[in-house]
Image: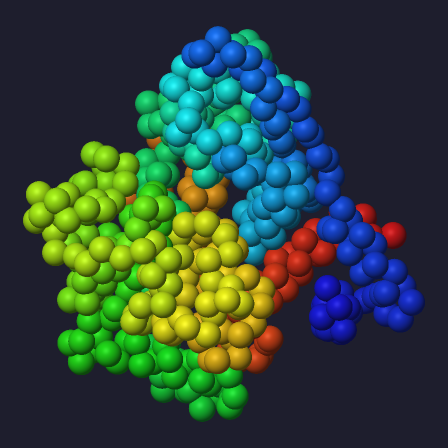
Length: 456
């Protein structure tokens, strides 16, 4: 935030002590969460045991619009994690100039250990506990880790029961198509994640090739040279080697996008899930792996399974994917995957954060110093919330957008955000792509706070 204070071109009408007080007020507002709501969900298990499950809904800030953020079902959910993710949602929505604030929800369960009946009860109880604090013009949840469109359908059904006669469709996004959901929502985060990398290489870096002398020296020029090396490799007919950690809605879709990409030649050489890594230096058969994953909800992890599916791959430990030879690494699993213990062993030149916080701050700083390019989560994985906004809009006008309209809008917004961030970062030589994203988001939030008369 001190960078904004020192930037005299930002809010130039505020000077000296008055300027310092304005920015101190803004800092106080944005570092203080609006509301932390914790409750306990009591559920009758199939064994007739009654369990008490901690659940959270945390609303960080709504200066930009209604609170917005997913609900995750995971045994590692904590208040601190949910609050951090709510802050990230505020910044993410501000970066992409979506009319939302930031919120997040969580339930401390492993959904794989609960039956459908039990998950249905957990979902309905969550809505019952938090009904006064959610709604289409207040706080709009969506799916996250461990939840999906089925859970959103259950939740909106319960919301409708609690609020008869009221507008309910826009109370949740990420719903099934027949229940007011948006076409393309499930794949949106994965497609947006791949698009952030593809746009940087194929659109932006190619366009800058003739003017690269303007990029200065040092780390910015080193990073640009790595981008140029990637697209020139494809131009020579050599495949760009891609690895994808995580093979769910984000990683699986991103892998398929890379595999099918016509403008750049890719080989997806490695994919992984919680059970292991599959590797083939000549490229994996992604279509067969996706088909297998749709049927089994995991990747094949025995030689027998691979032989049966006619998939040529080497079986490795799940963590081995991090240090394999590759050009591009799409991280779409969980947080803290690249850290101080392994950051010096990674070989990729471009890292794309499809998951939230898969690279620790220390590793991010190290990779930056090495001239590697990290496309941060706040920029890369925003496709889901962009399409959620379209779903919320269509629910209000009761008119279904086509999948082409949804994806065109999402790709257009992603491209505009990438253009803004990378132009600022490379040509103003700012200190890190992630920092550039945060700075852009904070500018948007500070300006809204200032115009709303909040900074006194």
